Length: 143
View 1 (spheres, one colour):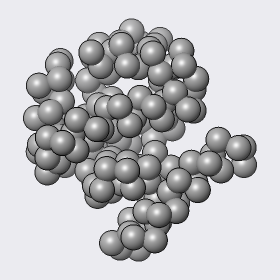
View 2 (view 1 turned 120 degrees about the horizontal axis):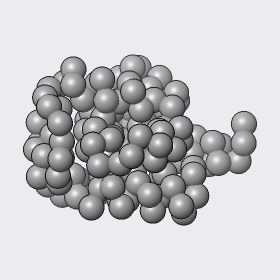
View 3 (view 1 turned 135 degrees about the horizontal axis):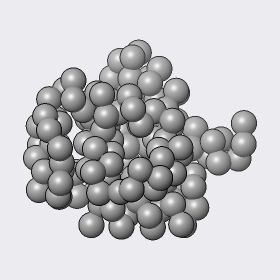
View 4 (view 1 turned 90 degrees about the vertical axis):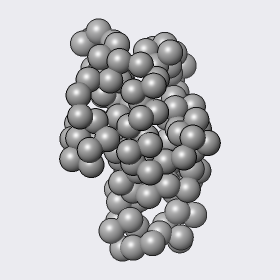
């Protein structure tokens, strides 16, 4: 296990201790990004996964195929996140702007304060796993 994954796994430990179910705990161990979102934002596994799917749906519509592939290569569960957002009803069509993204977050039960922290948390994560260029590429698509 490389150092980056070890650090992310350690960051997930508090959420594992406070997981509301065994399913949440198992999910936190398998997916350090979802664990990070659950821990830092105090949201559920579905909110974290659906929120990621919503965010990626917006990014996909605003990025070139090549750039989107670069970002999703850093997020192995990207397709699963986007499918989850659809299954939860957070994404029912294309997302083209931040209003659509915020509407998706609201459908997941996230309040405005939590939603406002979601994007910076994810872009920071992308920067940690893919470096500053990946972070900047992703962040530019979300403006």
